[in-house]
Image (cartoon, rainbow over all chains, first blue to last red; front, top):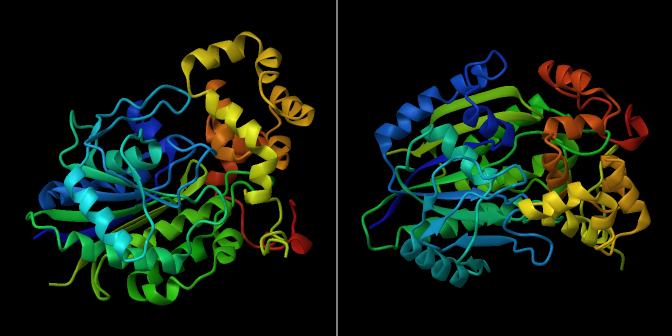
Length: 280
Length: 131
């Protein structure tokens, strides 16, 4: 049977992708941030997941305002990196896992989460930057990826508790898939940041530290936090953090923290990164 | 019953909700068109003429021509859509975000290196130093 073997969270800042693509990762500005992912690259090379279920948000790339799915699962066999206005990132195309993705869609929809099934989709920095951070610059991504796009652009996004419970339904779906697969669930975006208006540049380190602590130790209570607390305390774009709760819901209540990293700034944003595993 | 907006007292912040979406629909869809290289070329060749192809308000067109990102946001633009404009211009999110704060790009970048804008004094409009 397939099983959920670990959870990863990371920010997905576009400037981080540009720093990788342009060979700037050892510059003074970026080196301390990329150093926080050195352990992670070794860890993932050793753990070798077969599939990553990658929760991210589309940033006006695959979805414009014509239709706004709250949860969209990518069921295609391949996904191309999108041209976001400056040409596509020079990263490999993603190989999907249509059988597992369809199985998850069927199972999760029957658990009362109304997913939108997407059979053709380009993917943006929200998805490709986390892959680059964890895998570097390979010629091909070493595992399959199921993109899972969550609307956090148009208010209201799904609630924290909705995301957390979706994570639980997701785990149940993965663990009823017949093939023997190691599946990681990733939650991306965040941490505190605001990209718009006169309050742009907001960072709240105390909020972020508390969020990391509670995500690890008390996720069910954290999931009750209302949207307004994210927006007021972590900035209008800090609301992306609800996606981390999908990852957390897919793991056990008690977990081991394999890696924890936090850094300010990554361009406009507080960079947060966790690797969590179920206790065995 | 009107939509509840518990976020309306957050300073210096426009939440892209259903009302803003309706207001900014055509502005944002214009932005999306810039994801195609041929449209970027057409826009660059004649910005006003290209904007006139869209059902945008005069206020929105002016804000685009002036690259005034606050005015674009106040008239219904969303920053992820607006990013297609500044990306086409060859600018980053940091440049655009900085331009909305009244700081120079250098001042803004320096603020971020020093830990970003503090949350203290920036939670509510009535205590805000920048709203």
